Length: 612
Ligand SMILES: Nc1ncnc2c1ncn2[C@@H]1O[C@H](COP(=O)(O)OP(=O)(O)OP(=O)(O)O)[C@@H](O)[C@H]1O
Image 1 (cartoon, helix red, strand yellow):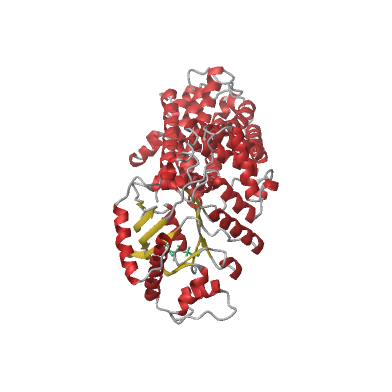
Image 2 (image 1 turned 90 degrees about the horizontal axis):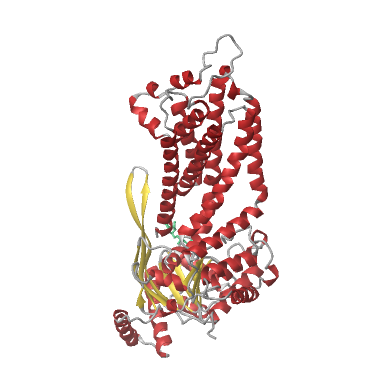
């Protein structure tokens, strides 16, 4: 039987003249173009562990982002994968299939156990072509290989920093990608974990992968473990080659590493300008060094100046002759799960997370129930009395406002956190956006409905609203609709704005929209503000809830006084200009706003994820 996890073909990446420009905007000043990478070149080979080093702000992460395809906009130059030009329209998506990018923050879902997280990754990435028992074997094998076997049943939130990093790597190794990018994999780890992390990366490289990571200042011992070094200073490459040859390279420029000095520290000091150096000559020499290396590796030969020129010519030709050579590796990758399967696994994952977060869910339910009882008690029996119709008006308004606020805020705050994990998983091609969103909405919607019911049931009963099927169902329908639409607008605000702005905008919008129809009738509103009245879905819900209680020919209300002005509910409805209220039309409008908000959320998340 064919090996379901075959060894992937070697993938070499070379790049030339890579630039990166950003436009910076400053208050009251014209936009400025800033170049961060000034045309760097180099080659990263399969079987090598490459460290991109340099002082803070030198452009390491920027280079890694460009090489991995995480950043595209603003970048220039040429990137070739096994001599095939990798463009934006051609090759990038294929390249993403054979590579993975492990970012600095280990975005693992805290509520899952290590084995569960791994199983999910195998189900999503390996689809149905590989039988379950082989997936299980793969998980155990990877956990063993990365030293996580003993932590298989530990919750991700309880893992140490080093273990989280190893888990992040294990999750991506499921498809055995031949190229792995890592952004500062050792940051935040103690020296023992750092050593074991680098040993692991070296082991993965020795198995034939192309391992590229950014690094700060490693110890001398760690430094020597890397097979290839790429040093960036102020957006230029000042050294590329084996660590052992680094000091002699700088020595030829009169930059001498003091005896007993950590060579990694020396490298950073040179890059930071602690030693007087000419960046341009260093960059030129580093480029030549790279060419010599390329010739040696390709031809197993020594390279002199003439050889370099010849090689330059040949490699240019090689680019033009791009054949269906390869991103071959992409063709032998496992087929990922179908959309439905992705939805199934993601939905299951969300259910597990909700179950494990039961305290938070319970708290949400209890709070709704508690407020429902308190409000109901406060406005006890106002629903069946001609003298308390105004109090009931306020109760209905308060209920709508409460449900709108809770529906919106819960997701508005949690979605940005969710987004960080989504970015990592989506970039590494775990799943598509549609099944992800569907699985998220289908967990959040029932939860929000349950919370709304926990509030409405005691509130409705205690305030003695009419127990007629049509009225009860219409009242509940309007309240649940506002709650779901508020949730949808919460998702949208969370997707569009940073959380600091979203938490402010959400409530402001709710209160603003709620004023129309409650504190003011249509005829009282100035003409320029009337469009707000018309578009306020909050107004629709509030008027709909109230109309369901008093409209449709409700009989006279009990009155204990000699005269009650609102004995006939129609009088109040007339005063509030609600006589011609169209419940069906209005509920459709609320749901329409909800659906549109969901669609916009989907679109804005999609465009954010694909804006590279
Ligand atoms: N979108 C951007 N707009 C403006 N400046 C940017 C942008 N992206 C990066 N930079 C700047 O480019 C420089 C290089 O950033 P980069 O994150 O690549 O540095 P780094 O070498 O990885 O640093 P560190 O080790 O501290 O992470 C920094 O000065 C950073 O401020």
